[in-house]
Image (tube, rainbow, N blue to C red; front, side, top):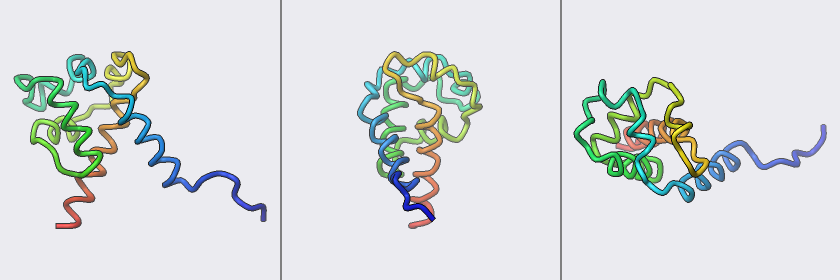
Length: 108
């Protein structure tokens, strides 16, 4: 067997998450174009607040209800990815937010 020259999966994933958290400006464009916003019932919430809450959920597992609803209602359309001018993959961040929510629920 050859020794692993790459970082373990968890380390690589954590690095990818950190890069996206750092790159996100919380402009809200991803929320504005998302077809899941209306069905999630969060269209009255400021888009900047929704994405800001997603970043909180990714970091801590806790965040505003509107952000939780958006994360849970993601339809995987990819419209958010196209809307981002900063190379962030909001769909990936929504997945990480769902993971953060799940982890925080297990701890309770």
